[in-house]
Image (cartoon, rainbow, N blue to C red; front, side, top):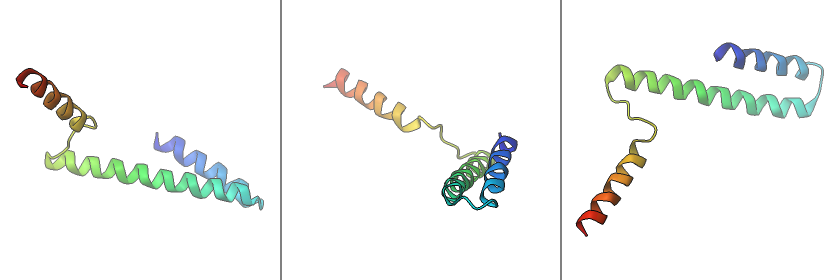
Length: 74
């Protein structure tokens, strides 16, 4: 995954060095997205290491559970 993202960024950088401003904007967006993904992966690894990682759908499952309880009790 990281290899593919790095290759995409390197390809964008090669285009930018040839002077295309539109490519610069795309490169900046791709770089921002890449950094956000790296940060998200790093945070997940840290939480997993500390035993505090919640699943992505944790709150959705809680909401569904609460709704079912209310329907059955109410």
